[in-house]
Length: 336
Image (tube, rainbow, N blue to C red; front, side, top):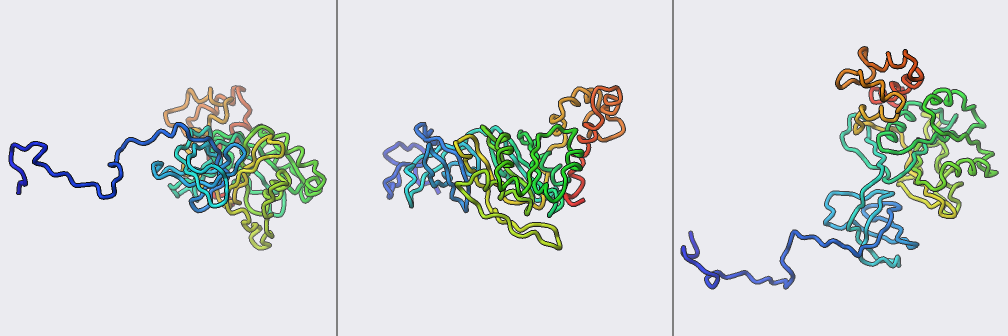
């Protein structure tokens, strides 16, 4: 039923008054050009702790960001109360473009990826040489995630007083990964801390490792002014430690010489999000040899041109073996 005739004008149409007296809704969003820059230090149940200049500010994500989530390490723009006083809350209105992203999934069949940390320069993979035993497959998975996310890997081996590092060093020697070997005595006298610091200065480094390897103990030694609860006991039956770090946290190294991001202990590192074709780019000495590969080559099949490339002496066979071992990580479980 038509309410008005065919020839209506503005005087014939009644407009509904705005009872709230506020402005009509619009799709034009404010640009927040005066927003302050900050860095996300930790996230806890929708509240984000951020560093703005020299102040620690509590913030929440603005509604206009939608489903886009900020994670530890993100560079963000904030508005609102930036004083950092108790019971104040700012708003994150923009998440800046990320330079690197460390992702993981719960397992290889889980399509839901979790961003662990953003904008890190380096991934320190912490593994104990004993108690619990090293898990090379988990190390391989962390390496693949690092290469895929744009982070440089660093291997940190702890508890060398219980077992020598020779086997692990032989396994990863062809990858030319920088490494540090530490013992409990060296952590106590500070010599191990000094060696690790040499690899961290001026960089943002995310620390990962399964429970019980001494990751948080090492972080506490590196950042003594902000202690985290150290690891629990290693289970004698499973050989695994108990999670004591429950959320990622960015900590400033003494003197402002870099950042350490301590992450929760992991028992699995799914790689569902990783495209295997990108892993080859972590091996620049092998990339030229892929020119003769068939289309969509997995680099681990009979027609792969890398075999002839290596046989001709263009690259070390150990490098090709390492590449294929990393590519095969999605087909194997961490404990295999």
